[in-house]
Length: 430
Ligand code: SF4
Image (cartoon, rainbow, N blue to C red; front, side, top):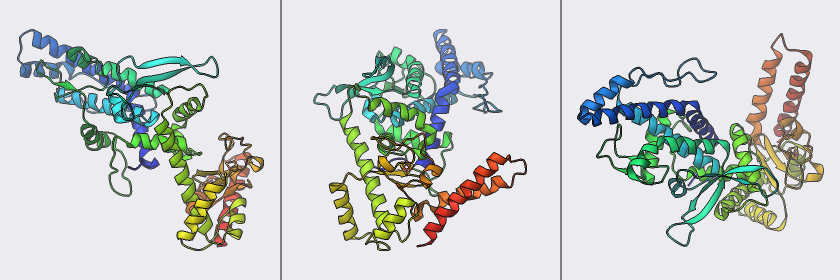
């Protein structure tokens, strides 16, 4: 099963995060208001149909808020039916599922097993700082049917998603007497006396994500076609992100995921999900293998390390055949070669020659930029990175056209153009 490509994962998660923010309060207020009116109408003896009409009149005046930095209400259309209330509540549910799946890497069975009150705070093993954890159970690898108790590090949006779900499905838990957070109802509107309440099956979540949530957030196409989401992609995407040494593609989410990575590498972190760790390692290895094959066979490479590799590689200009694969197998098995993959090139990492002052664990993420890498002895650029350097060059040329640009910014833009020219010329030499 594939991970979600960055071009889909970033808008998917950004929209989900936006929905669970202030917009969630609107949806919960609307649902509570509508349900209270419906319950009162039913209690007064009205039929469900008549009670529905009464609710529609009551909620017609509901207005959604304008979120900070935006000009119009986040949901422009007025609420004209109880079906709209259910639709919005369900999309908020989908957003919470996405946030938890993509930001902690939990499986669907683990998310559906979560219960109200599942956020716990514990001190980190290394100090006094306290971290939020999501307390649940792992079922897939457990010995018994009730799963093994497990704690996931919960970044702030996951804490929020749980708080939203606690409110959103409070009525369903109260009516069913069940404790789970992710209960759904058979009703297409509000909760009536004959409604069925249960956990969804995986296919329901997959259908909702693709047929309802993706259009609701206007998820972009991938290669001109809709990207097919499934319930396992959050875990794969999370593992890939944490496993790879560079996170530039998902920079927008780095703060949330960085928190998780930091706590997971803390020696005191309990309850490590070993299968998830293996998945992360596998992703890192796959990326290293692909990058090595590409570098060994490229007819030209840029960057200091790239030029050395291109000069010495006996596979230069060849296709990726069995010889290349065998040599890469040998390199990966016999050396402690560590390769960092990022948008603008490869890092053949050695701490002693690291221009970003990286340490034992790898490059320094704070100083790791195109400019620093372009002068570093560890850096290699292959033809597949050419567009990144071309776009950077064009962007800085455009900047120079601004008459109001100050001297410092002008000098910076010129220096960046020179860096791009140097790298592109090295690639042209092939
Ligand atoms: S500056 Fe050098 S060591 Fe640091 S990430 Fe770039 S290539 Fe790697």
